[in-house]
Image (spheres, rainbow over the protein chains, first blue to last red):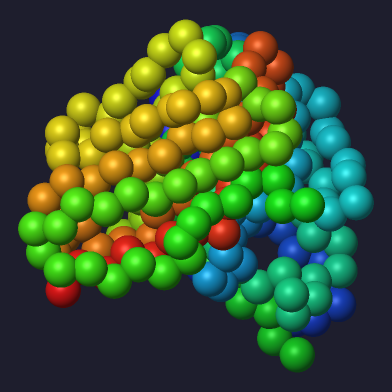
Length: 111
Length: 113
């Protein structure tokens, strides 16, 4: 599985946008970029995923660089409930590929 | 309805015991997983399993064994429990053949004393 690099921690103020970066310089053409988050004392929760084009859903937006070597998860208005560890994961379309988690970015949201 | 459910939520047991954690998914997914999250909060894949193949992380001791009575269930059996097995265990599922998301259970906190 290809590896990703994320900052250990980030801080944001409530109701401000948050941009969480992820580097994946060894990404292959068949790797999708997934983002999950883990709220305190809960299991990981899907946020968004994409392949080449930017993606939007009700939770967040995913901006993917043109060369696909990096991506950014965008939370448009952070709330206190968004405080969590955010994981950027590469997952190939090949059969049998697992979701391999790195250390993630711990996001703190300040009131 | 909970998509992926695990029981029990908490499990405290003595060293040397054998225990099981149950997992059920009602999503009709083909693949189920077990993950271990240790005290340092790293999530590590232990197993992935579908009706065709069991893929085992080679670092998992053979005291751990997944058992799947049917497609909707993947239980985790642990023999001869050790102190180092204390962790939170998460079950998850996803659909084969499509790069869709995984759904995780709420976790089982295992404490070995």
